[in-house]
Amino acid sequence: MPTRLDRMPWSRWHWLIVVSLGATWILDGLEVTLAGALGGILTRPETLGLTPARVGATATCYLAGAVLGALLFGYGTDRFGRKKLFFITVAVYLIGTALSALSWNFWSYAFFRAVTGAGIGGEYAAINSAIDELIPARVRGRVDLIINGSYWVGAAMGAGATLLLLNPYYIPTWLGWRCAFGIGATLGLIVIFFRRWIPESPRWLMIHGRNDEAEQIVGEVERKIMGANAAGITDPGYSGTWPTRIRTRTHTQWREIWDAIVHEHRRRSFLGFVLMSTQALVLMRFYAVSEQNVGEYLLPFALGNVLGPLLLGHLFDTIGRKQMITLTYGLAGILLALTGWLFHAGVLTAQTQTIAWTIIFFIASAAASSAYLTVSEIFPLEIRALAIAIFYAAGTLAGGVGAPLLFGWIIGTGSITALFAGYLLAAALMIFGAIVEAWIGVPAERRSLEHVAPPLSSKGL
Image 1 (cartoon, rainbow, N blue to C red):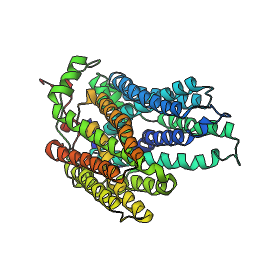
Image 2: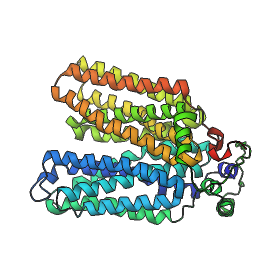
Image 3: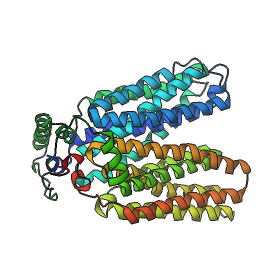
Image 4: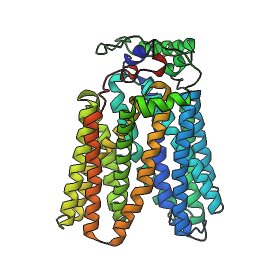
């Protein structure tokens, strides 16, 4: 059955999966941008009248909610199914962002932001595992990268929306910030509507002994594509994989999860942690630098982040995962160090600084997206969602807590030399990620998920 899923030619059904499941990243980019843009507005007495410290605390609540939601819903996704959880997580997000618009004081707003973060964090685990298990192996890399890179589409949408909603000439200040959160709730409703047609992962169903349901889903998809594609169902370029024997199970024991992540796949766990942490730290580093010139940098940043995965994604399926991940991490680090040196030397103008950052983001965005691709591919089916959640949480904590404190302090010193040191630190992290990938990276391109990481249920068979 995995072979039948992987050999399918690309179709409208696959586009439905990409749009309805991939919207998660757009929602996250939208949420982060809106919350950031609203920070100053919420300090006004006609809104919530928050202090700057409390505005920062609400961002921490969102972060904490995302981490806890990822871990909780990640485990639930592996135990109760992809489809059930990706409905629950988007519902939690929708409720959280809608209630954020109805907040009446700091405590209510902080709690609702934590709920919103929990929904988004849970979405990452449920969505990435479902997408990988439904998308054909030959295009899995480019699809994952494009979806993960769409975060910046949401960021651009949020930035554009605030220009209208936060302008008192059009909408009163006391109402505009509430309407801003209504955008996310509206998009969440649209996403739920489209997800009605996304089936459960046949791979997950087989692990849990529901073979008839899995066969029915795959058969229906094959008939849909056969009717829309005169060339037939088989992709002639796909060679397939061998049958895999499994023992069905209701759930995976915690002891087996621990052994798989910490012992059996410890090299892959280290790889996932390094890639997720370094990409999070460097992206937070970019935010710290750009805060001085948000308007000047926002559009080039968004453009570079979107175009990178879009234009480079197919190379991860053709040239290979190890080669491209090593190249993008290493090149981004080298360019970052070079830009830091030019900045320190006073060579860059506002225009050349913008161009330099756009080029770096173009490459670094593909590298960052590949971190999620790697983690979602290299662990067995039974723990795939939880593995994504664990390394997402680790990367989020590293980038969301450590980097802002460090680089906020650097910028606060006003020292060009200290800022140059920050450039070099971020560059070193990216280059370290490249070295680790070259050392223990997994060549997963065009290979079935069961070939990359055999299910735990197949041990001893």
